[in-house]
Image: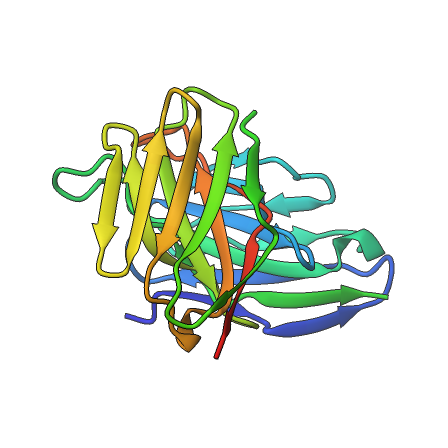
Amino acid sequence: NAGVTQTPKFRILKIGQSMTLQCTQDMNHNYMYWYRQDPGMGLKLIYYSVGAGITDKGEVPNGYNVSRSTTEDFPLRLELAAPSQTSVYFCASRSRNPRRYQLYNEQFFGPGTRLTVL
Amino acid sequence: GENVEQHPSTLSVQEGDSAVIKCTYSDSASNYFPWYKQELGKRPQLIIDIRSNVGEKKDQRIAVTLNKTAKHFSLHITETQPEDSAVYFCAASDSGGGADGLTFGKGTHLIIQP
């Protein structure tokens, strides 16, 4: 299992450009998430998905869009990039079904994409 | 929504001493509290978690305690070692078995002095 993979690892964008951050997981997890981490801060939830075709907004969705056409992939789209979107972006996933005797399953994180908007 | 406060922002301890990081949360419906360790330039990794039906959980040198009444939980690391140096994040979720994401604290930079 590769786990959660993200591409690219690094990217520099000019203001107003657009791009898609890719996220793929091979653990057959239903739930997937996008977080952003600003320098010296914790992670903030951008969007999440409970399964193919279903997405919902998190705490900081403005300026982003997502889609979930398959269980494995959960791309994050930035339209009209702004300097405020300079951050490290982490994708995560977890199983819908808790392990035995547990109520909640661990979220597994990808390696992150470091994005700079100039 | 949920709000998680974490203290201190930086903690420096001598190797072999104990370290304690504290978090408070605002939503009484939260029932899951994980702790993540993040090394420089790496992804967050779960080190321990606790659910609201448990007051304390221990895994070797790491322990977490939860006080639901006061809405706070703490991470305890004993016999600290150089490899414990990292940023630690607490988080909370009110979704139990649902899909909602985690609300994170701002992190504690733990420095282990040799």
